[in-house]
Image (cartoon, rainbow, N blue to C red; front, side, top):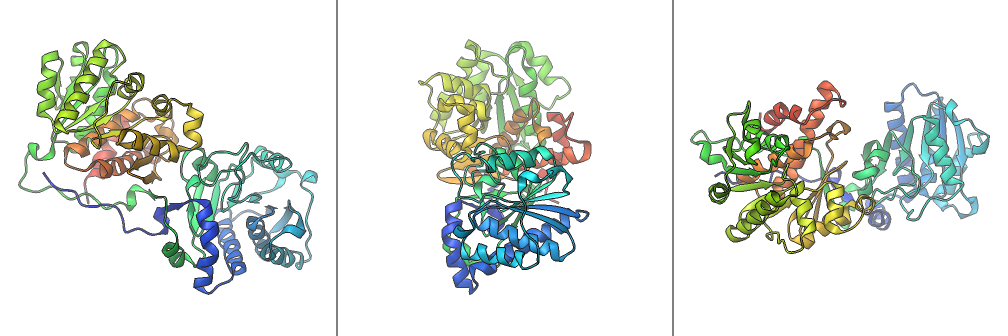
Length: 506
């Protein structure tokens, strides 16, 4: 069986995420080493935002700029000045004690006032008349809930339904977790600087951020030498292709996958899993399901092998090289018995497995069940993760990084927390997926992901590489399906032709 080498790309700042405090502390040192002042970085930041403004909103004529008390406010003054000098009609509102502004922000403000313009009171404005809002209200330092009047300003801006371009981070978003601090700007575009803040790429933070643009302000090399990232963020297109198949090979060269699930009334889940595994190159795929579902699982897909007799399960487990359990498994005695048999087998035979859906729900209910250490990928959505960790969905979503790490550490597994900006955690490492779209919020998508992961494991890919590569492969297939046919009405099975295309190197 082919050994898979590292298929991650050569890393750059565009692949790394950082905590906000890291950027705040290291940025001045990086600037000094690069021989530039912090005010120069402020000018560069303003220019970077203005460039995105012109690229994305070429028809904008009237621009509202909101300047807060931090360096984001200083950046906002620069953007306002640049927009004015290029002929745009600019209205600037400031929300800061001027005396407490940093020297750099004061300089930027003075240059704005030197144009002959002034500042306006936000309460006198009709936000809806503007073509665009540039958000420089709050930076990365916020942790508690946004207070009035800034909360009122954010709400009014969102309600005006005008495009929002955020500076560094949407105001009101927690820079590290991506949770909303009471209320947050809902930006179409965000331009972040020096290091990508972890809260911008997962959960609700990804939605508030909109399209993310990154600029290192000319100090990227220095910053990378000084700061250790907390994780990596990947687009599938940035990953190296997996190796081509050997000419001298046969079906046994590409693994034997056993998929267990499909209880009474739930044949579709395990069928999707099995077919996804075939489309992603598993040599042989066998499905063990409830006897009532054999015909429905195999109908139209004769390449799937079927088992349903109790005594056949152990034989099938000995036959396979990797296991998927959970899709359509149910929670009755039949399901519990199958999960216990599989976990015991994996513990004894040191066999890789993917645990999803009802396998996770059952596992969360029985403390006597033991997951084999360093042998499993678990793939919960937020509700399943909440059940396992005995917490709420809100707690999971408010700190996705902490909770996916908790799963990985508590059970010595590779954990894949699904959702917007899916995250993989393993042995202290984090990987985040850039791909995916709302059209994938439909029944069966997780079942297809389980099949993708199972196929990669069966073909000899390691646990961590399988989780990261499979996560990005699955999500990007969804993006291609969405691009061609739209988000609404997408079916999980719509991904199959795209998975097959993407899994084959060109």
